Length: 252
Image (cartoon, rainbow, N blue to C red; front, side):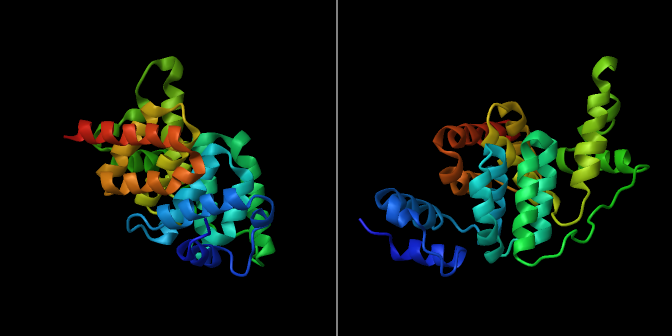
């Protein structure tokens, strides 16, 4: 079995002029993986390369694939992902994965960008202030999830109500209101964070429904899962598909 011409061309676009060392040390494995990931999977559906790599970067954050994340950044940029988009993916991951898991990825992103000659910090993307982040965050929740989110920040038992407020002012007010990515892109990467980390299927179903509500329909989410599958494996991909189907069923 040999690496297909489609896989070769795709790999060359990802990493121009680069020959993988795995061709020497693990030729049988790399033939099967490259043919699957960069021909069979990459050729499935009609997702553009930029969107595909945004999803993959988010999935690698979710599954803690730091070495692959570092390696994929230049490939993602070759397919049109901008430095601002890369940073926005990393920043938003903190709300869903926590800084303990995201810190190495922030360092990796900075190191790769600097190696590419990109000056840091990038242009600021924040649109909120300490005074309006709660209000703006609640509006983002309403825009994405619907009118039922109005007043959510003040709801729930008194002893845990502060967490609902933090969801509004921090998760949505600090991150979703930033420039660099729109709501559809932000909900897609959130879906990828949740799908790849596993163990949070209720939230994944909720965000699958939110994706569908703002235009990322069931077919699109199935494509997202499909393109991330080589990077996160079958169990979490199948769980994500179940959540997509559940969300679609609830929407009927």
